[in-house]
Length: 76
Image (cartoon, rainbow, N blue to C red; front, side, top):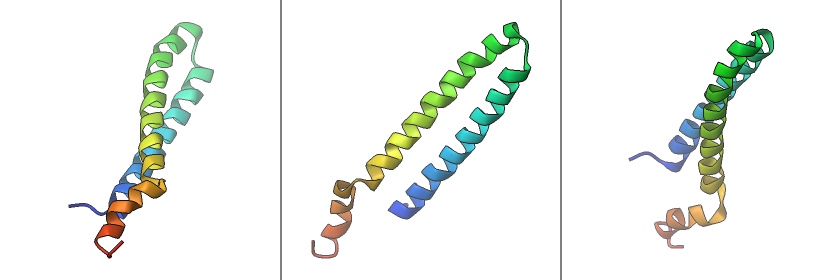
């Protein structure tokens, strides 16, 4: 079973990887011709949606209520 820190690290790694992919696509889109750019726009939207999902999970993990279950084992 993974600890909260392991899960947080996994989410941060995913976020960094997705950000790098988004940055790479933005560069490609700026360099590419208009018709090629349209192909990348859909992929860019999908990656940004996944990035937002990961960010939301990370924020939920950081909320004080997420620590409540961890504190139970320590007596509250």
